[in-house]
Structures are given as C-alpha cells and as structure tokens.
Image (cartoon, rainbow, N blue to C red; front, side, top):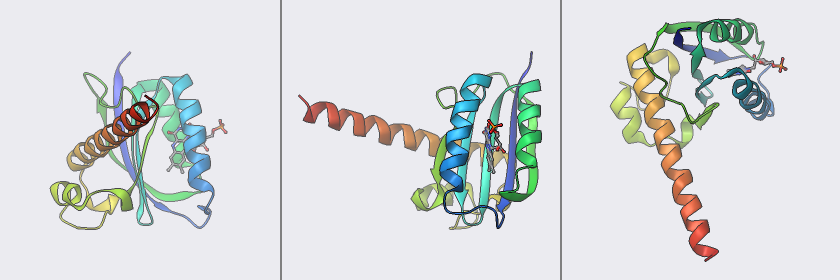
Length: 152
Ligand SMILES: Cc1cc2nc3c(=O)[nH]c(=O)nc-3n(C[C@H](O)[C@H](O)[C@H](O)COP(=O)(O)O)c2cc1C
C-alpha cells in the first residue's frame, strides 16, 4: 500500500484549554505507534501545523478523526500525496512549540518572524517541520550525552 504524507494547518478553538496539548500528545504517541503513523506537530497560539505519514487508509481515517476534534477549527489541508519514504521515521509524533524555535529557522522557511501555519505553503511547511524535528533530535542527543558523561 502507498505511504502518504498529509499536511494541514488549523486554528485553536475555545475548547483547547491549558491541559489540551499534553492530552493530544499522549493520545497521538500511543495511537500512532500502534497505527504505524509518524509525523510532527507544531503548536503556537496562532494554530497547529501537522504532518502525518503512513499507510494511505490509516492516514485518511486518522485525519477524518482529527478534523472533527473540537479543540481546533478551520482545519485546512495543505498537501496530500504518496511519498517514496518517511521523513519522520523515528517519531510517532515529534512535538515542537513555536516559541522554542530559533528565529533563523523561521526566517528560512517563512516571510514572517512569528510562526503562523497559514502563512506557509506545503513545501515550506514540509521543510520547516523536518528542520525543527532535526533540531529536537540534536537537542535530545546532546542531553543524553551530557547525562551519560555526568553518570560516568
Ligand atoms: C491538533 C491535533 C492533532 C492531533 N493529532 C493526533 C494524532 O496524530 N494521532 C491521534 O491518534 N490523535 C490525534 N489527535 C486527537 C484526535 O483528534 C482524537 O482525539 C484521538 O485520536 C482519539 O483517540 P482515542 O479514540 O484513542 O481516544 C489530534 C488532535 C488535535 C486537536
């Protein structure tokens, strides 16, 4: 079966309270691992940008569920199509908060210096999420190295 990539942007809704993100990420990581779905989610008060990768049927079904989630609205499909390989193969769902993203990255992928998912086209959104997930991996690897050195 085809592996597809689906990218969408959405706005936060009133139902997206302070505890929403933790819950969304916990459910996503649990479900996606079971489903063979990988990807990345960027959050900011201006909205969500998410990429889902996986078997076409599974991604379609999951997207239908996500669209109906009342914690966001204006869910807008940016890109959908078959891909030769996954870009987020090590992530059941990489999570990045936009306020933790270096300005240099935003300058690279956006005409704005604040993150707004609706200001990015699908090509920038794809490059941007790969770059932020890579930064996250590098950061986690450094943290692990530091811990290992501290523990001898
Ligand atoms: C912005 C956003 C992104 C989400 N991403 C995922 C996801 O990647 N995987 C997932 O299973 N649910 C995701 N959800 C949650 C789903 O909408 C839904 O609540 C969840 O899949 C229900 O899972 P359950 O039936 O196991 O409780 C997301 C919700 C929002 C608002």
